[in-house]
Image (tube, rainbow, N blue to C red; front, side):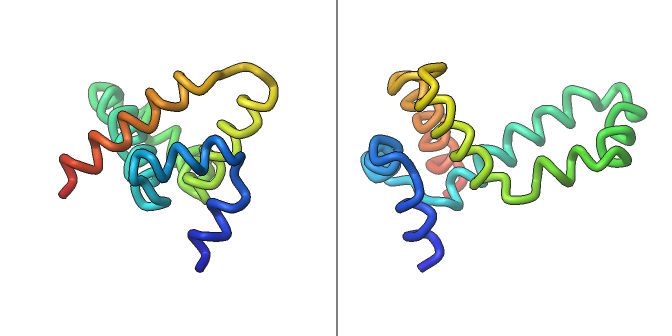
Length: 103
């Protein structure tokens, strides 16, 4: 039920693309989690940077409602003309690939 409400709040194009790629909220969460993991691993040689990220609350903020914020930002950027359908498709293709590897 919550997922349907989430999709209904999205731009129709984005909602249709999610359906086309057979993605749901968990798949977007996995995409974002993968990106955050890569960010953390990029700093493995600098543990102080990871500590600062955690201590500052930025990591917590990035994790809180991450999929909703991600999709809302895409929606806003699309409305502002900062991104287009091909950019969104690239993101969703990445999410789809990660979904396949996860299973």
